[in-house]
Length: 445
Image (cartoon, rainbow, N blue to C red; front, side, top):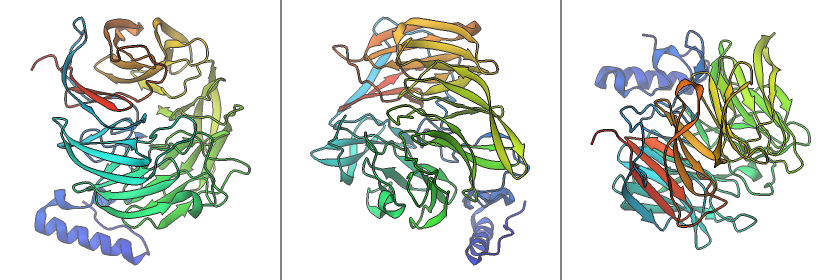
């Protein structure tokens, strides 16, 4: 096994030496993950193409280990009883917001706006509060409430509030280790409905998309908050409401995200802009995280159409060519790709669920009885939280969409149940503003 990076920077050689000493003292498991296998946080050489998973256990970031809304859980209920699965616990007092929890080990972390502040809550897996910390002011503009989920890496939590304040906390105690005003740092301004990006940790780096005059995207040193690289701005563009993904393709590692007017890709190791495609509506709202699979990236813009783009190497960069368009205008719910099928719900019209062939864009199935929302996927089934507060288990066997159980999470219909479900450890976590519910969805207990 190769331990050393071929880098000129002294700090990388020092890190490699530390890793080597750690290996001798405590075995390979004690080495920093970005140093093992001779791979930098850049090197995609020799590694399989596809989404890059977090090395952390459980559900350590937005939409899971690969940020794709796909859970690795097995042995789950194939159908729900009337009234839904068994409620294990619920926690009230989160404050207002739409952020989803993350789960690592015996802790769960979730945010909410409480009494004018953004509050990060740490709970144990029995729903008991362990600590609370703040990350600046709450968002009290249009659609008040907390936006972004936290990210966990090597004992630290990372979060950006609605005003662009990025914070690093000790995950065990909630103590603030460093903070940075991302908007001020990169010449950016806040957007209409506030900064909403769920930060991505890439080895020693923390990725953020300020959309400013000094950087479209930036990588920060996750230990200090110092800038590692920046991506050139796209003239006249701003940040939007989506969050990035990280994948390997064509011998390089790539970050894909959306700005107010474009879908784009960036080299994860240098920050170089690789491609951009138009993605524009009158509101500057691109809220859906891009979807990647088999050399293709799916972008969608609110209220209008999006599409799937095929990537191809072009000299020392990448080109993105439209493969197929779609009228499927997902917004807060995003989309899930599993077994060659894209699952998502429309927002403007039609406002129901679709199964779309990943290669052709052909609609394979529709579910018209459930309104738009967000979902996670596991064992051939979708766990959907519709924006009206209904929760449904949807069987996708045979390319169909069939409801295998549903219940009402809320006592009355809503129009803003937008938090994404989380499925880990045999438990389904659902959030609506002040309350988090935990359901047991295992087939055997």
